[in-house]
Picture 1: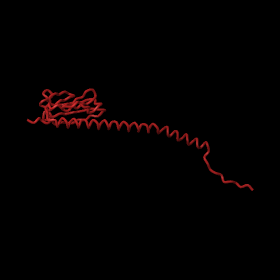
Picture 2: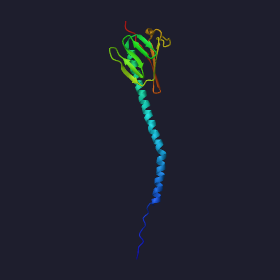
Picture 3: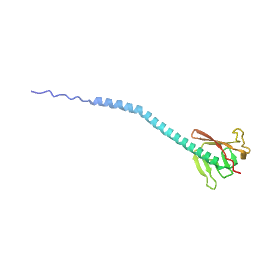
Picture 4: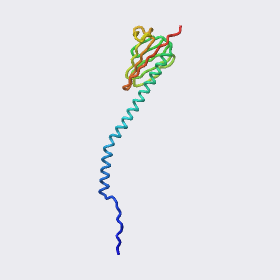
Length: 159
């Protein structure tokens, strides 16, 4: 007597091919989304780094200029030099900081624009024509779509 052997259930070749086609279509549809997310993350990381570098440069420049204790000897829309020897200027696309008796050092590269405004102590009276009277300095720096600004209160030299 012949026994009927239990039949094993398995997927047919056609069913496996159908599943592979469906999975391939899903992968093809989601690949651009995943790639787009990766690019967005890389762009956000680059913008964050540019913002942090710019903030550091502006903070460093403000600290050096406010602690210097010199009068403004040279004033320009994108450069300042104090009588004590400190100098901040944009040359090309780099913001440079020079300390007394030191070589100029790059503070931040890739800077699009620097704007310096010179004011008396009231913060309203523009004294660009006579920079030695400046007691307040407004610095605005632009880089990679970011614009950061700060106010520097210049210390007067001790008499």
